[in-house]
Image (cartoon, rainbow, N blue to C red; front, side):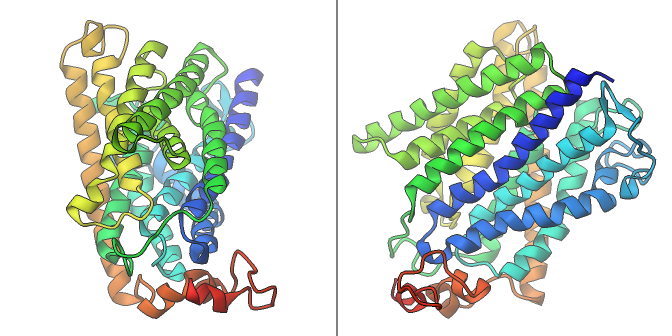
Amino acid sequence: MDTGDTAWILASSALVLLMTPGLAFFYGGMVRSKTVLNMMMMSFSALAIIPVLWVLYGYSLAFSPDGSKFLGGFKRLGLDNISVNTAYGTIPEYVFVGFQLMFAIITVALISGAIADRAKFSAWLVFVVVWVTIVYFPVAHWVFDFNEDSGGWIANNLEAIDFAGGTAVHINAGAAGLALALVLGKRVGWRRDPMRPHNLPFVLLGAGLLWFGWFGFNAGSAVGANGLAGLAFVNTAVATAAAIIGWIAVEYFREGKGTSLGAASGAVAGLVAITPAAGAISPFGSIALGIVAGVLCALAVGLKYKLGYDDSLDVVGVHLVGGLVGTILIGFLAVGDVGLFYGGDLSQLGKQVLAAVVVLAYSFVLTYVIGKLIDVTIGFRVSEEDEVTGIDQVEHLETAYDYAGSSTGGSNLLKEL
């Protein structure tokens, strides 16, 4: 085991953990003031639930060496058969366990933005447990487990390229967000009442924390302190910057102005798109990928108005579309006689499309079923009265801002808002 590799993956794990509080600020700033705490709590609940499930059985279902190409096995239940001397490549397996845990946490948290303002917190907690078990753990095995004997079918059999989780994280979460948005339906007053972000500085802070943490997400996926990590680091910086330019360019074309929300959203779109490609394309290719992702994601967020689904915080437009862009463009931009533009043929492009479509379909169908079952049993959506009042007060007995300076947290004023 290599101490340098171990130190870098430990640091990367901490960076990826920071992404979930960053997401809480990003999403929290985008909702109205009466629902900001609920929005942030949906992210923080993932921080509470997923680590426990990961130790009990999640890591085993994703990475146990006694599994099949579709699901891990049971030798790692409770992290059994692992010691401080058990190696995963050049790092201790416990370090790899911690690194992959952070991916599971952020993936679940990403979904919450699609159903902002209208979901019961208790129903969300149930959903987190069921979804991560039935959907995320198997998909993580497909994409991230490269064990020669029992690795996942996307990683080992199909050999699609997904460096850090364009399919397992972003397409997976984006498809799940779309399914839940359809299950819960539209917010009260959608397309009629103004639903502007209540705190744009929160949004920018969250985007900055996400960008910072994403260096661990992508460069850490090299699973070592090496040149591949350096390439992923540079590509992450470059593609994100280019995506901001692409998104802002769309805004200038449409409105003649660039917005802070657009800059923050463009940054996240670039981060999403470069995730699967960070170790497979050149920095020059990252510029092209970032611009394309920024433009297409900026255009895609308007699809909800044309198609009639209420994706509150554009999880579909940014994560599903951005994940598809990054995953598919690998077929064109991958270096080393792999991508179509670099001496390759259509075979890699076909692999990328198949991996993206299968994960999208698997996640969407199962999420829709899970959401429907929760809805018809315990109910997934709050009442219309509670939604208008504000979920913070109803679901958490508190509010983010004490407008009235009283112990009630300004709930009467919030009802008026």
